[in-house]
Amino acid sequence: MNDTNGNSLKKNLDDWAIFSIINNTKVNQHKVIGWKIVAGKKVTAEALIYIIRKFKGEIVIRAKSEKDKLELGNLATGADKINFYLPNDTVLFQTEIKQLETNGDLRVKIPKMIAQVERRKYMRLLVDERSDVQVTFLKDSSDGRNLSHNFSKNCFDISAGGISFYVSRSELKYFKLGDDVPNIELTFGSNSLSVSGKVVNIMEVEPNSRNDLHYKVWKICLKLTNISSQDREEIDQFVFNNLPMDNVI
Image 1 (cartoon, rainbow, N blue to C red):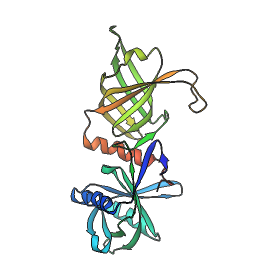
Image 2 (cartoon, helix red, strand yellow; image 1 turned 30 degrees about the vertical axis):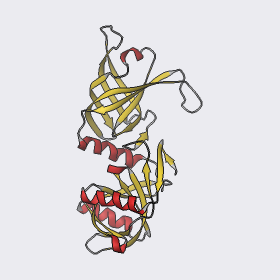
Image 3 (cartoon, helix red, strand yellow; image 1 turned 180 degrees about the vertical axis):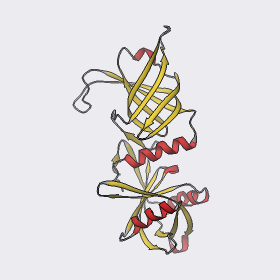
Image 4 (cartoon, rainbow, N blue to C red; image 1 turned 30 degrees about the horizontal axis):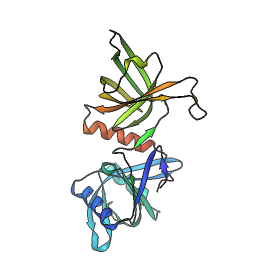
């Protein structure tokens, strides 16, 4: 399966597994996102799985709001197929449209194939130190010396589960595996959250033709902690909206 931003996707064609995931999404009223690429931009609509008619091989999708109803209708009008993302299961699929009802509900076929992100609970977006994805925090040194440093770093990548950023050799003394990093201000796009993190990996990164680095750095990988489900959802939505996914499914 195609790979997008380091998210390895695995095909699943098992009818029982596909139905189980879709049914679980319905039973738990988990959000689904309808989407397609229009003029190079991802257009989305949030919805819920309202009805599953297994004997007819169809799903009824209902938009979450009036705005989403309009967007869902726009996505379906004049189209034979539509894409969906199930954030709770990191599942993507494309399916045939059967009918757009007068009340705004959308009837689609149960898909024959889904694509699921392997080895990750959340999709990851490589931002490669984009200026609109940043962390700011105060960190004490981890080498026993009584030192503190204010960090403001552009992130290398972001997901609802964690973030990473580069530090220099002189900054490395402030980090070791297992360190807790409280009171992080995380900004992404127009959003800003206060979160905490734990250092789960420190990776040495040498300059090469792919990364445009001029000297060796270290990538600090943080697992996000002390974060609400709503804040995780905000991050996951940002990641999904910015992933280059036009060739994924």
